[in-house]
Amino acid sequence: MFRKILNKKEKPRVFLGSLSIVPRTSIKKIDKWAFYKEENIDSELRKILEEIFSLPPVSEAIDPLKTDLVLDIVIPKYQLGFGGIADIGLIEFPLFWRPKVQVKARLYNLQSKKTKHVFSSTTVISGWKFFNGVFSFRNLFGFHPAFTKTDMNYLLYNTCSNILQQIQQKI
Image (cartoon, rainbow, N blue to C red):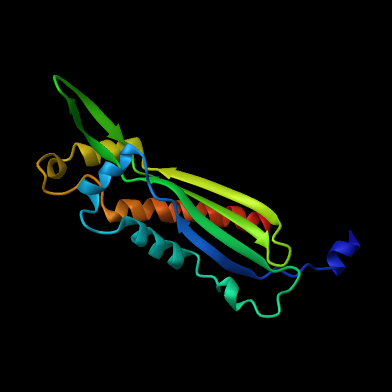
């Protein structure tokens, strides 16, 4: 017990490795037409990630220590949300999915490249907020999209906050 008190561990330095967003390939990527119009969604999400994880880049790690860690962040999956009617010939059916963001992070040792921890968090907009957005007067008559950048930013910030809390517990 006294050894723990006498041998206080120094917190390791953490550097930012890579930030990446996996390109979307599913049918759910059609939601961008009603959402962001001509904007590049991936670059918008990347900008927010850089703001949230404002760590020094791993390239600035001069004289690395044994305890130095690197954090890689990836958004493997996100969807912007959609609510509408799908039409295939004579059959029409409702088609809905809620906005969602998933973030994964890998924390590894700078010198050994050995993974110490992997973190994952997913945040989905609440059902109540989803239906309020889809069935709002402004959305139904085409004045405003059901979900905005503000909604996606909220989800991304919450997801990243969960990741940061997980990292704090492990370091």
